[in-house]
Amino acid sequence: MFFLAKRINFDLRTRLICFQWKSLDLCIHLTNLLRIFPQLPKDLPFLKRVNQNPKKPTTQFDLSLAIRFENCMEATALSSGLRPLPNPNGYRLPRSCSQRKSLPLARFHSKETPFKKPQGSLAITHHRGLSFKTNVFEQAHHPVAGDLSYDDTSRSNVAEDKIGVLLLNLGGPETLNDVQPFLYNLFADPDIIRLPRPFQFLQGAIAKFISVVRAPKSKEGYAAIGGGSPLRKITDEQADAIRLALQAKNVSADVYVGMRYWFPFTEEAVQQIKKDKITRLVVLPLYPQYSISTTGSSVRVLQDLFRKDPYLARVPVAIIESWYQRRGYVNSMADLIQKELQTFSDPKEVMVFFSAHGVPVSYVENSGDPYQKQMEECIDLIMEELKSRGVQNNHILAYQSRVGPVQWLKPYTDEVLVDLGKHGVKSLLAVPVSFVSEHIETLEEIDMEYRELALESGIENWGRVPALGLTPSFITDLADAVIESLPSAEAMVNPSAGVSEDSESSDAFGYIMKMFFGSVLAFLLLLSPKMFHAFRNHLI
Ligand SMILES: C=CC1=C(C)c2cc3[nH]c(cc4nc(cc5[nH]c(cc1n2)c(C)c5CCC(=O)O)C(CCC(=O)O)=C4C)c(C)c3C=C
Ligand SMILES: [Fe+2]
Image 1 (tube, rainbow, N blue to C red):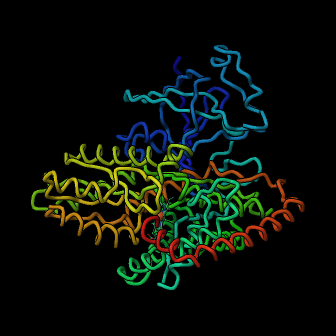
Image 2: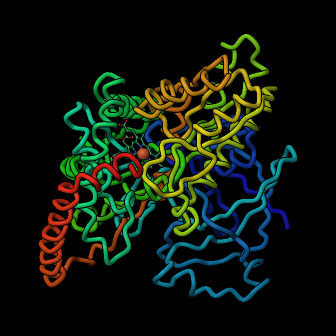
Image 3: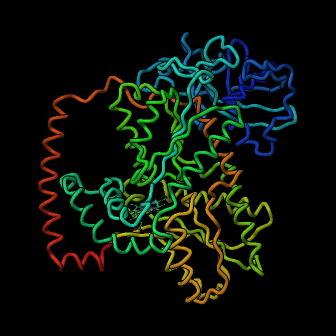
């Protein structure tokens, strides 16, 4: 069954393509269109502009689309940037769908998943013969183009919102004196050192012990790169660049930086967001791939902060959990690699060596951390892009920066470098892939330690791709990611879920007990020279 939809509204701000079909108002996100048809030019020249109202960020286009509803109930997971829009009059399903199966309409209204189900899936055939399938959701009844209401709880409206973007990052010590307290914050994170429940009260003591023991080695590393981490400076610059890129796309937003383990802490950023009365927030962790230990940890802190604050609890928030699969990121990485390959005398012979920060194997195998899978997919995407440009180099992925006695993701970077040298690889291009700015692990571990090891192992020509930093195509893509996620923002937590007095007082009691036993343990450990040396030499 094919239908023709004629009047198409394209909202420049939210990038939703909305059109009327029969009595339904439907929206599709532009990303979906472009994801399935990357060959479509981004400025949509195939849409003929018929009318533009300068007062509203909506342009009306004339486009013929042949639309076919199919497999209504097979509609799958939501894509980023797409979510069902609340309809005050309830959802009506297209006849063709409801006739196929008796649809449990109540499911669309159920409390647990009020708007989590797509309306159905659409197969769209463009008149040039292109076709794609996408999920669709019914839009609010009788929408006014450019004035779409996205969130039932906040009753807010993207066009009127005060938009904030919160960049989450790890943070790093700015001076050598900061190193031990920074390490303490890192190891005190239950997403970094994961203790079984009965032992969690020891977290602080263990963090203190490990941070004191590791600090001298870490300090050497930070001293070698100028006495501190460049992460704060670079992240601030990225924040500014994203703000300007958003501005260039007619989206005015305040951009904040929230670090997990050092200044400016996430808590400070959140306070500022509240002070600035932000009414819609996009959270963008600066980690392309999701790990429990990075994005997971930062988002957990954020959720705790929002849950405790009645104002913040009502702010619609969109979290971009991972973005390694975005074309802009993949292309920008491919650009950097392609450019760096040209610095070798024989570019074709160079082994492209992706080095990612590792995580303990238990994260992936026991806790379902998607990090490894996302990392492998990410490398495949980058290599596919390079292949499409005629770059056919061999490549390999290895994991660096392991800490402690447990098994980490393999293969390990240091072991692979030695192996490659043994097997006669002469030219190697290291590509840091889990992070988008320079930091101790690129500047010291890769550029110094691994380079030296590679040269000792027989590799003669060494190169390293710089981190993405402020690369314009990358920053523009992050701005696009922010814009695309705006409509999907929703209140993070239930505002009525307060903290009871009972739980507060038992928390205080627990805290005192933890501090007491933890301090005794840390004291004993630090007093024992044998223990200290065992940890220092073998475990940390
Ligand atoms: C995707 C990136 C990262 C993952 C995953 C990650 C996991 C992880 N890290 C540690 C321990 C340490 N990390 C340290 C520094 C550090 N880690 C990342 C990124 C990821 N970590 C970055 C970018 C940095 C550098 C920050 C800077 O100062 O520039 C450190 C401190 C440095 C050192 O002493 O080596 C430690 C320790 C664990 C245990 C872990 C997963 C469980
Ligand atoms: Fe790390």
